[in-house]
Image 1: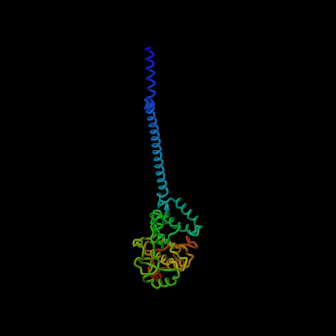
Image 2: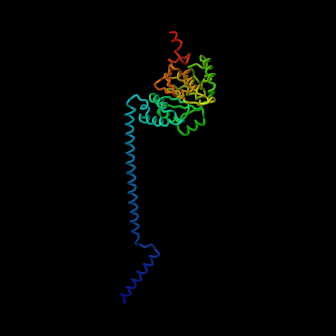
Image 3: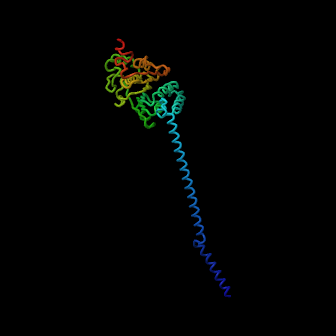
Length: 325
């Protein structure tokens, strides 16, 4: 009987334990929770280790790539090869690729013909990095800026809204708006006035900032008049209609800038097949300065000498002192 009672008591205790487990957290899962936490800790440590290793490998690859590029640049540009593109830090193959893609886009009406793009690029290849002044903004604006990598490229345009638009689209672009006081229909009159004042306000060598010549552009930032421009590209303003500003002032001002500052300036005039460009090019840039090797039907290339070699009395022909000799 005693054993039976003890057994029943033992059975009662066992039963009450099961009931308690229905209302309380059992004691048996505690070891399980401990193992669960350990498992999560192991997983976390494994993930952390993998991320750390990937970071180390990525950093090592980046450093190796940077070192390789530095070595490649030193081999291409630091060897004194004399190529302007290499000296500017723009590798030759990048220069060529930019020209190739731009030339391929020259089939559209808004773009410059391929022959003209390549002719201008050949000049920049020799002169870059340099001081480049461009009259006119357009589809090739990013190209000229890129090809002159390491130099200073300044753009001038008649439309202040387009200037602001491209400045926002291409951060770091240096561009200024210009006011023109001429029209294509006035070509004969402004040429006659410039010829009559050639020894005075429209002389070939002068500071345009203080010029009274009607063709002179004198509303640019003052510091631009002190720059010795290596290359000047005239591809603006508009000149398709009789009421358009025309490029008389741009060509005249480019001719004066080239003679007043620096020693040799290469001036390129686009749309040279038109009357205004052709007439003003011959009048102020002169046929004796033409570079025929990089001239196309729609692009004229001039090499204008300044400084002591400049003729201060006339745009074309030798100085009177040489004539007398």
